[in-house]
Image 1 (cartoon, rainbow, N blue to C red):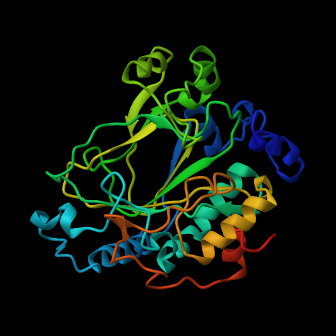
Image 2: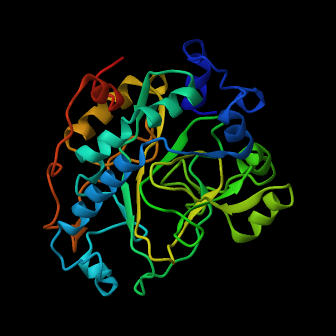
Length: 335
């Protein structure tokens, strides 16, 4: 129904896989698991030593706000000592999306190669997605699951693949991604039986987002789907189809969760209008959504009582090197 759906069809000649029936194709590699289950964990996409170096950069970044945060003192892991975040860990401001280490991780060969393999093209654009630093066992956080999909029910077919570059241990108790395994294959069927209700503002503001009610999870479970906590190690890459129902679990162990969100789609999916809009957002070093080629809008600056947070920045602490590859991934330059 959407412009993106039409674009996918129009550009198939530029891709090496058929996006219209990719769930029914056989590849003989990890893509078979991805399309069957709606997700995959690719081990050692980044060498562990580099992943841990990126983690240290992230921890240096968050302690650099000089608000009393001490990494080895859990009593300091409270809101007053942290910059503003969404869901107690997603940093949508402060130029976090454009720090050099974030762009370096986005351009890791193992990360790019995975998305190139899924989409069948090397000509990709990446989201200006954010980082996540979640401190476990916080007493000042009220946490509840919010099962959802990040693709509009009205949008058909594979349209976005989301990614987590994992920089810390993500065991059963360490928090992280929870998803409904296999739910992406039932996406169209579920919404045919349960037409999306936009009248109450559900998903109206953020079109490519739709929340599920608790009782709706049983519909998927009755059809063989399973709620699982995704486990991963530093350097692993977690990929999931945006049609896969998912949410996050708050960490209960002693590990500080550190990840980079990174989503890539073919640059050919993007309109010229959206490319220019995205290029302007890049020049302002701002964060966008999970979507790389559409839904292009910036989160802007962090605000406190109607005024810009004094901790806000106009540029990253360490700017990335503006290579031709980066500028094309950022949609500043064309392929």
